[in-house]
Image 1 (tube, rainbow, N blue to C red):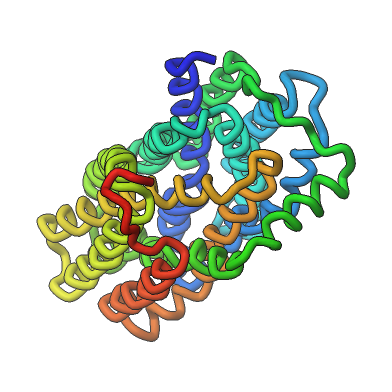
Image 2 (cartoon, rainbow, N blue to C red):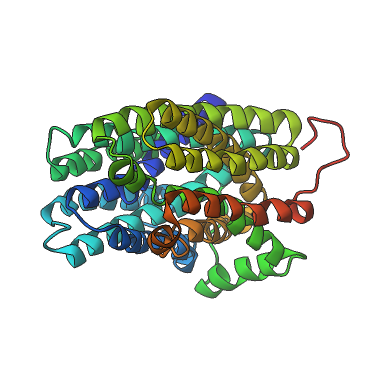
Length: 405
């Protein structure tokens, strides 16, 4: 596969994986807010994203078994992308106000399909990209991912002002064809990693190899903690904009989801470039500190109240550093995997990462009620500190010349 073809396929797969993220998070919460669901209940709806945290449990199935079409990775991608399209359309058949359980069940199924897609896309990218292209490929994947988030975030939110939410979600379902086309026309990896010979090999060997490494528990703690503060802060920002600051959905679409996500894309590209130039360790340090400080801008916004200027400043700065740090963070996680066990090991790492905006985010509605919005964002800022402290162990500032990974 030529470099240009790898770039296109990687970017479009990023779009496909980014699309369901807001659809089960901020955009879903906007729908819940429109349906007059309370803040505490909206916080509890974070449980629908639990499959992102638990996906390592079924990743061995996708490693072990090969669909009868398109090969192991591409076959599973087509299956998950088809399921996503159907489920995104199906959620419009339920209502969050009158049938909250059924609504949550379909949202949970969407996240399960999305998490399954992530498993195989991450493995495909790791197996398809040469080592020297991994950082660049990860940045391009994130670029596509952010584009998918813009579509399911800013554009979907703006559309919901004029068309019903079920129609919005049906449109998102139709967009899954982008990922399916990339999968269909994208070739199998040039060096195909053989499927495990048995289900035991698919389950035991990847975990045995990973968990036998020195300092593995510190690595897992870092993966959980590095973006903890930012993920907790973002778990309730949609409610903060709509209910506390009284912005309307058009304003949020233009500022929070439009300009903000554009800043996220630019930050992701900048982060990929910075990581290539100064190395992953240095990038994690510099961008991690900026990421933690940027949360404080939301505390300022909560203190002074509704302000378009402060909102733009807070969102643009926070999204830029989040996108930039995300590139270094993703490159770090990819480097922790063994090519023989890519799907299961990467799924384990991203599942641990996902705990910060699923399980740990569930009680945040109650934390906000206890602390108020200003106190809540200061709390999230403090929660970013453990990840920075762990950098001294997992990614110490290198003594090698700048530009050495």
